[in-house]
Length: 431
Image 1 (cartoon, helix red, strand yellow):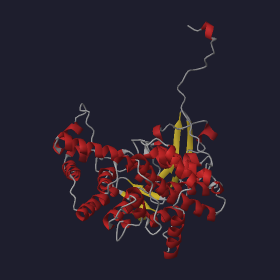
Image 2 (cartoon, rainbow, N blue to C red):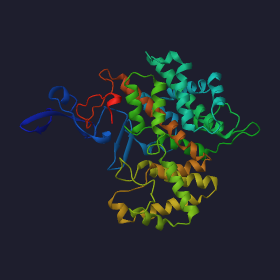
Image 3 (spheres, helix red, strand yellow):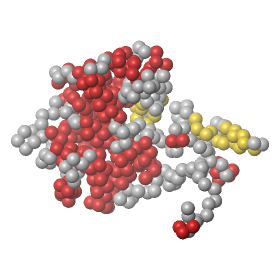
């Protein structure tokens, strides 16, 4: 196939730039040598239209509402039974595991679920009301102090062991962060329980009463983690790649991802949805009133959970979670007025030309918070659960980057708009 070029014309100069082709028909203009050869940079605020890496992990078509992990549509992970550990293996190692490979990976997770007692004792030194995301980020970094042999990751076996430690211990740290915020005694993990059930056990069991994990809730948590497991080059994933490009270790890189995810514009979106729904419920506004307020630019009301930076169609993850809500609430037999409000908002919005013309459809955050609430997970833990789900994606992106022999440290350019040459003035001469 002949190389295709794009032409950049500046004044009387024409520059030919190679065009790269993705496997799904996407194209990118290669500007990597533009500065070196022509002294020019490009300006792309927030990197909204810049591909800064090649990746085989996740494919998104926002116009068609498509999300795939290593080519597999996200919808196929829902039934017959969602399995987060299987999807984590797929993302990290690039293929679905065999029965033996999955069993071995599960065993490694179980073997590494306990925290070093030195780390566990550090929880006691934290303020009781510490934000769980702050604890998660700090403790992931602390893992590097207790598992130093995994910092270089010089061979495949070391990498697998590091992955097992990180994925398993992050779950324990997440549960402990909640227990600390509630002043509750820590509950040790149960080696006989599966990944999601074990997390719920550590969250909610108390010394005299073991938490009973229902199948519907366990499946729903598996599904929530799967749907958040990777989403191309979002803010936190890009952060992991930027930090990892400096050859920072896996623990530090993922801790940086947690910090990025903590931002309310990224991982905190479902929290905003829940606050909005609760405000509607308590304030007595009707869904119709809310949508009219959302369309009024002079009104401070904001409609959260609709629209997405990438999707200009119905977010495929939201469709799956919408159906999961039906199953969970039917199994629990506990109706939630917030779900009723959400359903009505969606129904009205999808029939309103204002939202249709602007392609504002429900996104993953619209239903994930309602589902987590049904499981008993408090609002301040929503983003922590998001981080647990996204961890395999971060690890897979970190590994892909480190396996690329041509990868250099990520160092964007800037367009300087400050002062021209200015001279230092001694303090006694300043006015």
